[in-house]
Length: 382
Length: 256
Image 1 (cartoon, rainbow over the protein chains, first blue to last red):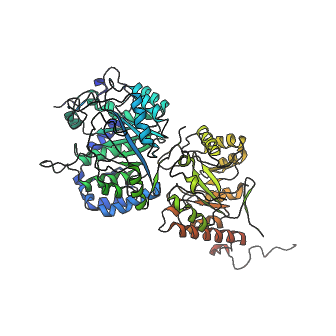
Image 2: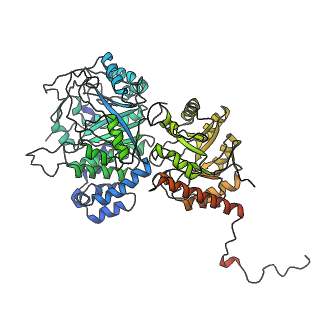
């Protein structure tokens, strides 16, 4: 049997264990989820009011997959009620692509022969200045997961630098301890994104072969440590398609749901990354095409209507332009995933290939054409 | 006879306070004109930086700004946002929103009472968004609130005045303008609030989610005016079966 790495005993010496039962609750609730057991009438019931956990399950079922139009009408209503027609814009900046992990699906995998780079403080400054020129006020700082090459002080430096140019700063880096998140928060970041990738601990162990990331539970509790450290908001994501996407989306929703119940002041959002179907893949059940991706997004919207949703640049413009306002509330623009690419001095390779190369003005125009308003700032640093 | 709304010594002819942020900024002027709006809220968190999309650039001259403290989780944060609003040139009115719940966005009355005192001391005109509770409203009045803004239903829910009986108590007992703040989803509900004796109505989502936001603003204006006129006219008695005895119960009295 595959070793699962879900116990605190597996933690490395520097990994903080916190007293929390959220992971056990989520995994046990998710374990009982049988997508095939739901019918059209279960989905209708979920659409008639607050769906709750049972309705969320129904909305993720194959039965709901045949009712997307009906579900979309309800989802759009909820998005409008909670967010009006506003859509936040941001861009990610990749400052380092060194990584200690061996994750079989990832471009930054330690064994991949790519050009590695870690921007110097001066280079970070040049990159951020180039991004700020576009008028964006929100930035998401990303690195590969290497505490050796991009340590907490390095990330703190990036955040501090970002605060000179941007009003809203988030990080998407390796999971940290509470005191480290508190340090980053003091430097100026208030949002933390961590993708669990898959919530199936067995599948997780098969995909994450080496490196600190293989410790499933340390990663799972990252958002809770971030909230305890004083971060204002946390984002969740399952890389849909790595495992059974319905079960992963269900567990991801439950993860956010239970954390929000425990910390009701926390701002919650979801990201919607997917593992694209590829030719000759025989696992047709788990493939996430656009209808499946939309279904997950609709289910998140109806289950937690107040939560934000971010749509990735991995999706094509036509999909992104239509999912914002319907379910998504945040969109990236002017994205460059290479290290140093914003300022035209790329010297490290990207993690993945983007499908929407449009700049900030183009995305803003597309939003307006769809009757939406681009929002650059929706945050006050307190 | 003029029927002015007076808040913190400032006089208004309109009793329709517009919420902003949920519809496109370039619609702001048309909504304000159609709604006859004289006071509009804005989120400081949306106005806190320069560049495109700053709501302050879209507010017509002559509008009284009512900046809100959305994003504040306690009194101290509300005070910091209020000061920022003042720095941005938004004036002294401040709508206090202190929320520690991202799901329902329900207000924290206790922290709000604390914030009112701190803000009143700094010369602000505090208008607190609150859960309709008589004791809390009295404390808010004592702390220096210029109006009380109870919610009718959760923000954005469009459910109407679910807290009607409690708002009615505030109207009767508190000597400050009572302004229904959240939950109003249609003009008839705004009209109902005004018939009850509320001093004004605030609406945002109801306008923003309408098919035609500008004409919905006009519908709200008309409903609010109608409700106000009904209140001032004295609503007719509603006859109920059991209350109307055919012969008087006190007709036997002599020696009057």
